[in-house]
Amino acid sequence: ISLCLTAAGTVVDGKLEGRKRGESTGVRKRGVDGRVRSFEEIPHTGRNGWVNLVKFFREDRFRHLHKHMERTFNALGPIYREHVGTQSSVNIMLPSDIGELFRAEGLHPRRMTLQPWATHREIRQHSKGVFLKNGEEWRADRLLLNKEVMMTSAVKCFLPLLDEVARDFCRMLRVRVDREGRGEERKRSLTLDPSPDLFRFALEASCHVIYGERIGLFSSSPSMESQKFIWAVEEMLATTPPLLYLPPRLLLRVRAPLWTKHASAWDHIFSHAEARIQRGYQRLSSSKGLGSKAGAPGAQYTGVLGQLMGKGQLSLDLIKANITELMAGGVDTTAVPLQFALFELGRNPEVQEMVRQQVRASWAQAGGDPQKALQGAPLLKGTVKEILRLYPVGTTVQRYPIKDIVLQNYHIPAGTMVQACLYPLGRSAEVFEDPLRFHPGRWGTSKEEGQRGEGTGFRSLAFGFGARQCVGRRIAENEMQLLLMHILLSFHLSVSSSEDIKTTCTLILQPETPPRITFSKL
Image (cartoon, rainbow, N blue to C red; front, side, top):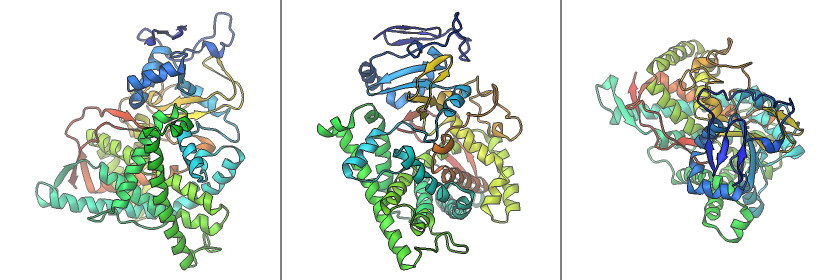
């Protein structure tokens, strides 16, 4: 492996030698001659991508990618290059650099293409949704989707659907605590791993908003079909990272087991979505829900699928592609942060009580209106932001700048993949005061308390940024806030151990072992 000597640290025999403790990871000073440094001078983790890939597999770095990034920033400073298999990137973590990157994203921002997903669509001859598209085609589809999932008018329509599912979840949990819990009748408590129920909640909520129908996952015998869908999404996420660094077509040719598992997981996701879409289409046709009625004043809300079909601006193939992506991306990405949220609220009882008091006051004034209830309880939004700061679901946000830029006084050519690394960013003492403290109040509207450095932008990026931010963002944010609101109104949360949760990366960050939570009736 080539050696690389830098101002920040050295790659020696593939091992990183760090800066001395106390040295800042802040802005790198110009060289003695005052010039901008070349791209080649950026600190790196070894030039040979295939050697690095072998190391990643051997040291199980894919599962701990977030920790690997944190260690590398600690060793090399706030910018470094990494070459793994077929992928090369420049990695950054400071808000000022991230702002510079996003200012150069252009009219059609690009993220890293998840090649295994794209290859699956190509060989199965499925259309691609906005997640896998770029350029003008991406923009046209995205603007139509935004109207149904991002705009305030759309949120107003689907919020009651999410609220209904969140209330039902709490009803189911209360029945379970009464039946299986300990203690006197009014003060019963139950300790359990809530993750299977949270996955069912996320799928039920997604289906209600997207297809406009309930699928009955809170019944005493939820369908096997839905459980298989949840498993397929987990398998798809777990098999994606290693495939990102290998040529998918080659794996396809040699019938690699990893590729086969990945493709069959996607096939299952597609067949589940296809069946639901067909059912939705028939239901809408028979009730004459198609045509001019979608979006008309006073018309009944038929879910995202019904809105898209009724307006007829996207072809049926593109509707299917985008609905399938929304479904695949909407289960684990909300169920997992909810696990972390219940854990952090459980091990921080003062914070929990503070959020509950605000929620109670807001709920009492809202008269059953979920939108008013959320608006009156900003600490709920702060809780979700704080969870995603400490445990970002997606560990990086990527962009390819459309023009040359300078980051940390290094020249970055246009078209380079640059990754903002969210786990090290969220836990950096240079960006956040007392970064390991769970403190939803740090996201208040006054001068951002608990945040450091110039300005306060580009610190909360779990849903991405700008035109290319997560298309399901409004669904996910409201889904999580509403569930936490109803749980806090019904239960006190506690945990038996306040030790940190060990985390692991599939394509998303999740607990190695789901935390057990004690729910005590209020």
